[in-house]
Every structure is written in structure tokens, then in C-alpha cells.
Length: 76
Image (cartoon, rainbow, N blue to C red; front, side, top):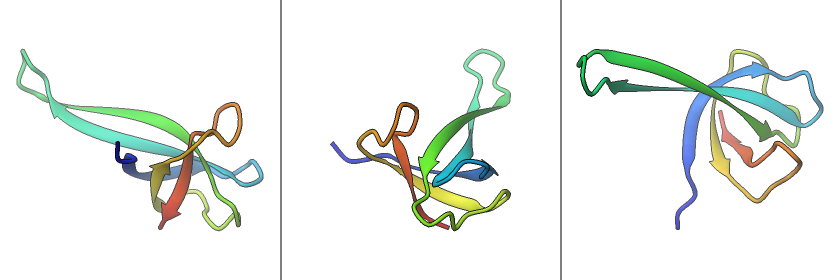
């Protein structure tokens, strides 16, 4: 099974080697036919602390790095 890749924006870089990435998805509501925006936050591993708040990044699934980290930053 291929690993998922998501694109989002860094919302926090306060922790060491970790960034919080907010990923937004858009879809059409099945009944109202209106475009709905939903966002979800993922904690991702950032080995070199290279990314700062506001950066657009891509994240990829990985084996668990800690209690909450299941993703790692692929690139900017």
C-alpha cells in the first residue's frame, strides 16, 4: 500500500524536531452542494528544525516516531 502524501502549512515549530502541519481539504457537501473547507492538524518529524511557521510543506506517512508523530516532512 503506498504511503499517503499531504500538503499543508506549518502552524507551530515550538518543539524540537517536530512541526505541526495544518492540512486543509475541500469537498462538496452531498446534500447542500456547497463547497466545505475542513482542516486537520498533523504532527510531523522535522530532523533539522528547518521549517518555520507559515512554510508550505509536504508530509509523508511513516512508522511511529513518538506517541503523536506518524508523519515526517518530505520537502518544502
